[in-house]
Length: 430
Image 1 (cartoon, rainbow, N blue to C red):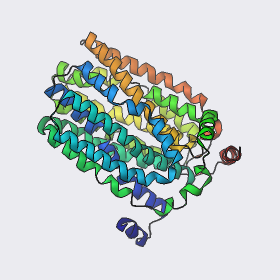
Image 2 (image 1 turned 90 degrees about the vertical axis):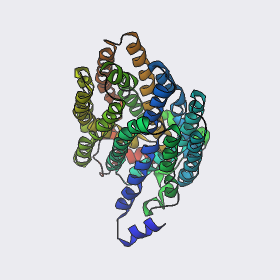
Image 3 (image 1 turned 135 degrees about the vertical axis):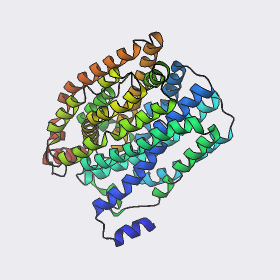
Image 4 (image 1 turned 120 degrees about the vertical axis):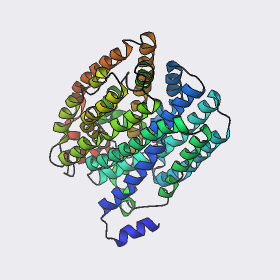
């Protein structure tokens, strides 16, 4: 591919080429991700403004259409059984997703069409996400750069989310449904090109010990017996349980504070990009300190993250508060995903990464339904109750760190981990 040849001629290292591959791919993936802000905000306002759905209806739509994400481990497991097909997944399923969005652009707008179309896009994009995250985790393990790749991944993701947050609200205000889905199709299309680009760092990726799996039954047994997989899944499940963060906030801003629809999208964009400074700080700290130190501080700092939402009285105040809220979350995001990459069993990177991704969305959507029910029942005080519940859940997440096997978090990023390597060899030999 032309890009790969240019990078090679420029003398870019394998590490640099790896980052040059994942950074733009991440931007595209998270711009177009069906459950992320661009698609989610645009769809939510289509339901609210054009189809006159209630807060509960929107939350239910988000919950039901995300069913494929709750089953993400299935797509991850499929990726692990066919792991040399990562780039093929990117190529094939990006084109399938384009076709789905084009169909939504051509069909008349209706709740039925939105349910079927967004559900189908969720399924298609699960294959893309499984290939992308599985490959990223494998390279992160092999190159001892789980922390640095996490920072690249999450920073690019938040930059994409910033654009998606602003664009989602703007699209809802100014674009027709047909134009909205046409734009989404055009964003997904370039992902196919990454299925044709193979960086040098990937050439022997599937030959390394970290990539060696077993048969279907053997992989299931290894996954269940691998103690390290449980902590990142549980931590992400609890960390993502935020009843006030989505639909209740959207309706609280629009109905209670009388802010324009675009404020909700702008809030999400500012909130997301505000993770980046502390996430970049994590990229520096992870090379100097072991994860066992960083994850404790990261999770403690993020406990009061949602409290500023209880103090807002206008849309402008919400936008201002989005900054400190995001800053409090950057270290936690870095630590959780660093832990997830380190915790992947050999040959099962896609499975664990998609399990973490799945519980992230499951907790988010389930807590959104709960929060919407609380808000609908008591519009005056319901939002405050949601903020308190979120804070208590974050506090309860901290003790779960004790469940992490010590050898998984014993070293800093880039440092060898003999104890973990010995366990890896023993697991492969078993």
